[in-house]
Amino acid sequence: MPKETTFRQFCADQVQRFSIFRRFDFLETTGQKELRNWLERRGQDSPTIRQQIAQTIDAATGLSELPTLADLNRIWNELNPPIATVSADCQHCGGTGFEIIQRGGYEGAKRCRCGGVPLADQNATYQAPVGVVA
Image (cartoon, rainbow, N blue to C red; front, side, top):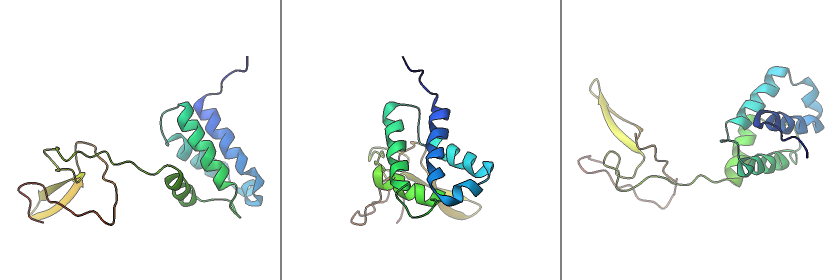
């Protein structure tokens, strides 16, 4: 029975797949570590996350040159679109994902404590939470 690799080793192996690019040989150890860390932050170790990482690397190795972290982010988001998790019932943000705060006479917004992630939709309309003037 083959020994299962750790998630860290799996991510390091995925980074090594970039060795098909000529510039990879010149990528210092720090750069390879940044790529591995980026992969490790995609989620908790699971077969699904490993599959999503492998698919992202498959797509990235199809590029004409060594991908940047921005390239990997773009590919990751195309393959794994974010899912909205906000609830319209949240008493703090009313489903927007952001709370309106006031500090030092200024008004701004911060991520809601509910942890919800709003899904960007160009056709969506903004509905201010109760008590907030839009």
